[in-house]
Image (tube, rainbow, N blue to C red; front, side, top):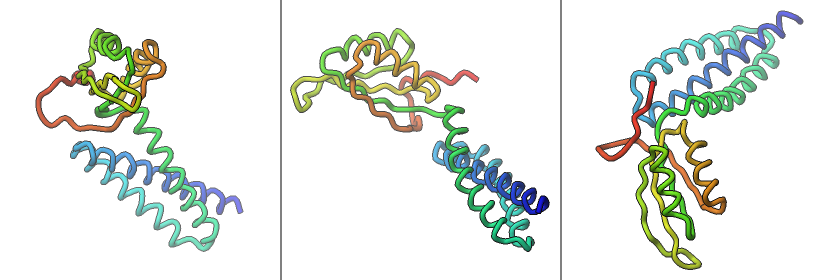
Length: 173
């Protein structure tokens, strides 16, 4: 029984590693990181085949299939967490403030962020719409600046890739 549990644990860890690599690899593909995506795909393939070989060659398929499935599910969450901690890439933040947009823009610029201000009309009247492109790892710092000035500001963010020119703070490696 100890051998079955140990083999199941190994299958779980292999599958968890495989899917972690897969999750990060897909995100690197979306960000145009070709070399890193290739490397992760290479590693993922080796780990995947090793895990699959252990499941298929094992006699205790119920245990092994359970470990395989649990490793898959866990690997997705681990991959997302690892990618989030790495903070690679850029975010485009949209900030809507009713009356404090100019001050938010000023403070973000003082902190080194590029900001574009647009005066707009919302449901209840005039608002200021700010566009700010930032490094993903600086998201919390930008959010803290915004919240300190206008805790009611509406903020959305999405991943972006720089295509040409403009102000992007260069990543410090």
